[in-house]
Image: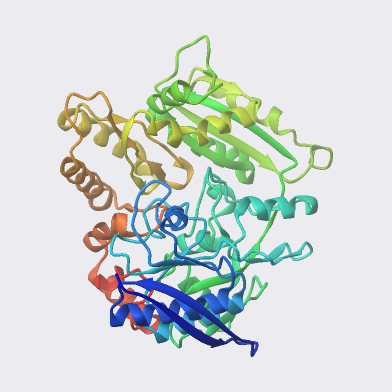
Length: 504
């Protein structure tokens, strides 16, 4: 085996000149070029800035739930200036890049494929900057800062970024996938709370698009920051964001409600929206099968309805207010009771009130519990919420008739039309797991969602390799053409590692 060491000299944006060496084995001309690039990147990013050891790279190459591949290297810049320089170097060398935040996504959008041809750009070290403007209710924050880190910093100011998730993603990743969460009905998604951002472009290589404004009103042309929201990192690397913040609730009231039947779910939602208005902060459906899975597999979890059995379906409902009861004169616990009393024995069969943290722990434990049941077949779908009941009846009947061994263990954000229509192929099923059957089933469910119920095959999780084929199937040719043109403008060499826009 032939072993060769390459040395590169780099001049950074600050004028610093540095050299580094990298050793490769059994190289070709292309590998020689790549090794020289890696040496230059080591100069730029310093110790621990470039990871080459497959064992060290492993966690960056495996998704939170789906996707596992290989990368040539993992690049870990710790400043905006380093991102600018590494983009310039990699574009000049025509080296493909894959952007990665906390790698908590569920569609493999931040996971390399098996070709071992890309450099993963991890922004996990880009987290030095958190500047809070409490008066403006905004924050400037580096893209690598994780949601929990941001909210910990905001806590002394009585503020928070209200995207409620079971995971702890990075701010840059949340923008790239337009994260929603369980409290979207009150606070909106990331798109609605993004005031500005800064991004490094691939064309021109290393150019900086600085849209770091803390303005809520700015009607001076197209809102270019929105190009990067939901783009999965295909249009550039977000290095900083300006976010709108909200006051922490001073009161919350939580209830786990058993509806009379599925039709009653939407009637309960309508009544609470009508009579509670802006106090309604969450309205989450949980199937009885999902609740039972949580009780089976999550330690120290108790049936909230004991001694009664788990219901067929329940609703996790939350009211919250940033106004204190002393000032507003409203006590949310009392309001919850007043709302539920006339509904009992009509739309509502049973209700557990209070114990908010325990009830939310049930909701946030569903996904983990389902993994213990067998092979999970996850659907992140949305539709007009008026269609949810009809869809659920039709979809579950379809499963019973055509795939009777598959269990439906769904839950989701009924208030915003979202549903995690999660299915499980049980580990003890008589029929052995078959990926081709799953693909057939997935297409049939998505056809139902998109064509009959005018919904989306990806409500929150974005577009990634995991659902690339469905993007091609359900997105109109005109929309794909326009998205492809935008990507061609911003990434003409297709170096972002994300190539599904426009059917490319």
